[in-house]
Each structure stands twice: as C-alpha cells, then as structure tokens.
Image (cartoon, rainbow, N blue to C red):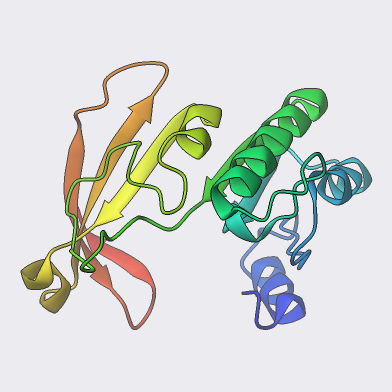
Length: 167
C-alpha cells in the first residue's frame, strides 16, 4: 500500500471502499496526523510502525522513550478528535531472534511497557518455525481493557494473496 498510495486508493474505490485514504507521513508527528484527521473527517486512523513517528514533546534519542511519547501523543489526538486508532507495532523477538507464538502486552519491540499501556487493545501475531512453514499464524489478545486477554486463535494465511484462508 505504501509503495504506491494512489494505486491503493484506486483499488479501494473499485472495491467499494472509496472512503479509504492512504497517506505517507514518514516520519510525521501527531500534529500532522491530526491535521489530516480534521481535513478528511476520518473515523478510524491506522498507523503502521509508530516507532517511526516523531514525538513532539521530547528530544530523546532513546527509541523507547521517543516511541512511548509518540504513542501518548497519538492517543491524546485520538481522544481530541473522537476517532478509533489502531497502531501496528513490531514484536520483540528476543536476543536470539526467537519465534513467539502467543504474544502479550510486553512483547512489543523497544517498548516493554509504554506502547502497550497507551492502547486499549493489543493483538499479537506470532508463529514458531513449524507454523511459518505451514503458513499458519497465532492471533492473540495481549491486552483488552474491556475483557479477557487469554483468547487466541490459529489461522491459515494465503501469503501470496495476503488473505486469511481459514480460522
């Protein structure tokens, strides 16, 4: 999608979801994002890799502090604009690149507490070597302010077409 935002928008319009807008704000910040939300009257904002977003209120070089601050600014913007926010983050693979099947809220790369703390719902996608070979992934709820966090499902992905084939 980000490789060609205009093409993504054209395809979404052809599929009947013409109200989808794709923007590349890399690195961008919460103020720029808020301007777009106001301009487009968005109801949902999805941010891919919040770790690449600039934090307005910090000069920290440390990625953890910068990412945590950016997440807090993102959450504050969502509240001001009364929109749903979804943040996609990379999972922490550990010192030896271990594969994790069931993720929890403290499994976010470079943010063991802050990013998960700023969200209401944390969904993890994991797999071990066997699952990767079979195109299967585990979807787990690492945090849910509204309820249970122990539920998870195994899915089968059609990686070539980026679709879930079976749950």
